[in-house]
Image (cartoon, rainbow, N blue to C red; front, side, top):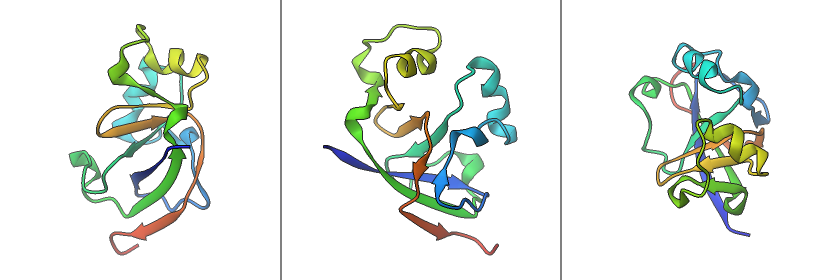
Length: 118
């Protein structure tokens, strides 16, 4: 098993799991829901990498998953207008590239770091 560490930024105080069911509730993910019906959570492979709209996040969540359960976007094996739906259909729990991981299932939180006063 090839475990990788993942980092997720949020203003939500999650208990136990980061869940894709929260996808679309934030203004920056709301429009993405229209592109694909697959609920998802976004993670980074490095804790210092994040989009500008996550700069003021209150929490950083850390988890680990088996990399073999993820579809590598760089392999270009899946050709589809909706890569999320197709990867999920093929049994993957998410997709990844060199900086980011998108998961379709809930993952257990291994650690939580408070970044700003709550």
